[in-house]
Amino acid sequence: MKLDHEICYRALQARDSRFDGQFFTGVRTTGIYCRPICPAPTPKAENCVFLPSAAAAQEAGFRPCLRCRPEISPKLTEAFEGGAVVGRALRLIGEGALDEQSVEYLAGRVGVTERHLRRLFLQHLGASPSTVALTRRILFAKQLLDETNLPVTEVGLAAGFNSLRRFNEVILKTYQRSPRELRKEKTGDKGQNQPSLTTLKLPYSQPYNWPAFSTFMRGRATTGVEEIGENFYRRSIRLDGQHGLVEVRFVPGQTYLLANIIFPKVTALGQIVERLRRVFDLGANSLEIEGHLLADPFLGRFVAALPGLRVPGAWDKFELAVRAILGQQVSVAAATTLAGRLVQKYGEPLALDGLPAPQEGIRFVYPRPEALAEADLTTLGIFGARARSIAALGAAVAKNPALLEESGSLEDTVRNLSELPGIGRWTAQYIAMRALREPDAFPSSDLGLLRVMKPEGGLLTPAQLEKRAESWRPWRSYAAMYLWASETLPPSDRVEVKS
Image (cartoon, rainbow, N blue to C red; front, side):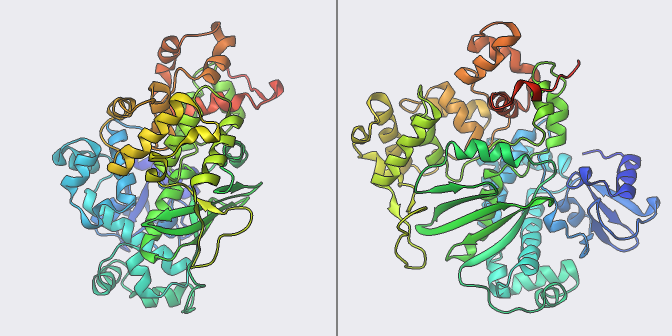
């Protein structure tokens, strides 16, 4: 990835937050790498090396700055040739795919050869997949040391290190301080954390349109599993058979969301954080996406009126797939009602640290696939093909838990999903868009999208809309979100954009 030295240096001089996460500065004289917003005195231009990722800086021999904390820099998704493959691989690495597996395994998961994956990583991130994975573990461990009271041994486990000795060696080599010394410098050795509760910052690149996100999610929140208020989203979770609760809060004036995580296994923290990042689409480079979509005279009006719009993701892929089936040919409100009934009947009572389920609010975790495989959903008002589709999906995922995991290209994903009973192209694209985080997924037969586009040139057919959306690539998922969200805008807020 080529970075213009002069542009990067000017951004560094200005401490321009728009560039945070887009590059890192390695300083030859100190051996340290920093974010563009680092408050330290600006080094001379000839002493600066600009790198596309923290992993590239790590591989070049620089160590992280203790002032600007690269571990809480936004992790942005860029648009480039092969970007979809790299994005899928990064999401899997974030979930720990290389903690115990090989790069060859990772390449197979994203549908390319190991050699090609290594080439893409070196070309665009400046580092190998293994270095990216190690840097993720190092920076996550540093964040846990700074922001939590977890014992040092648990920090190492939570960050994906298999032994305390290895954890100590890597941190000492990276920071020239032991984990305990880092903890004392930043937080004081505060001892034990509250039982099972961890609070962490989830950074993002501004702007972030929380009102649009919360409006979208509020209409789709499943009663008994999810709650959403003006500045928070809360839900039950299940990992490895154990229950937990997560709450994410919007913090006005800050560049992070605040996550409160209650879960009994500390080793699951990394996976939980990565999933939350996907739910809230924290890797989106809003400025890049908006700059591309603003060029469209019709769509640009909505983009200008809704800065920082994100594509809401899903905590659980199976849960989102069931929701997509429930939403076939019915209103959002009707699908939400049916989802609530399904949870009430087949959900597991939420149990935190052995405590009984609450009597109101979040009381359940989402039903397991096997629970729906044999369920008679017609008793809930889910009739015909949709009831059979959900049962078939439950049986298929129970048999093959990896059925809904990322694999191959967007086209491969849509084709594979469409082979499941009752899942057509609209449902497959919607699942790819929200559950699999495919930025270019586009449900072109969606009636809402077709309706919004009508003023431009009459009611389009799905094929015509598909063709019309070509210029929106590789961000068609975001274009779809802008079109859906535009229906909530009063006419006076639809800003005119001249081509």
